[in-house]
Length: 442
Image 1 (tube, rainbow, N blue to C red):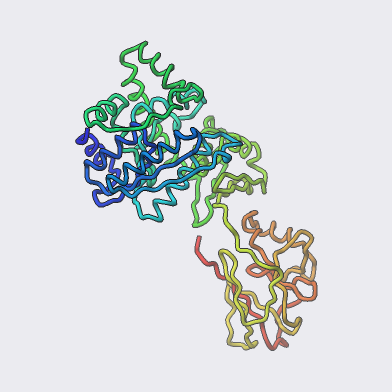
Image 2: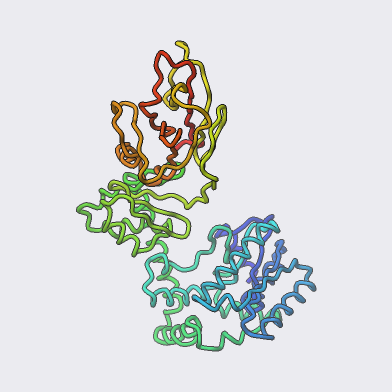
């Protein structure tokens, strides 16, 4: 068993010999087998246990058993207690999984563990496959449990439950039995106790055949993802903070719906959102949110960006040059310069005649109803909203637009245009220069 364990780690490149690994240990047969193998392999480990407090004294006895074991073996031990009240609403298993991994990742980072190991094995792969199959999962849900995902590793996927039981008996390893594993209350137990055994009894090839099918699906999914990536190159533009998808490829495309979903699901968007986006692909300004990303329809394209915690300001900002003001991704520099023949106009700067206003000026976000007289429109007023639309700014770009105001009148939109009323002329003595600088390039 140890040789197979070490071979699997090497074959799957799970970690290096010098890495520290945090083991998620419940006290059951699988996790205690995992701890024993790591100890036999002389790998630096720590043990993390989560007490869900769902089985009364039994839960506490599990924790005491593992803690005592770690003390005897001189293994660093960490425990996390979950208040059962947190399971009052929503799916208990999903909530518990989320809380577990949040804590494990936080602990691994704080204690400088390179990886987090769980004790999933071959039987878990088959059970998960059957559960996802019944729930209508796509290819990704049917291609098994990954041996490694980010910093999460599953070093027992080479073994099945019989292999582990044999190892435990030969090494006389003690473990705790979870009484909830006997009950058919949970879906996984029903699959484990009834569906899988029934399938195995129907055809002796089923046990290995299911795992072989899962492996075929995994390879098919890898091929699909490769083809989607290659095809998407001509339709997707990735800048530093925004991904733009040209939706014109969907016209007269028989597989457009599924292809588009394959493009956006990596950002956490679901099939229902995919359908809604496609129904409104020619609209502008529709927004969609996943847990980490937001998407915006814009003139036949879809813009996707990370949800940002935008800097908070107390508006308005009073401007008294020289001074600098920073937004999330650009800087405004306000300077006073003399009106001399030698100064050169720069493309990223605006120039205002200070003869037409006094300081302080007011800097604030634009709002619906704002209007000004853009330079070049011969004194005609225009709504800021229309000005931004005419300049083809997306909804994301509009969020960042500020206006500069004097006595209730907008005299400039920094980074874009000044008002006709503050244009410089030969009588201008001092100029306000507003320089717009992006903090990172696209």
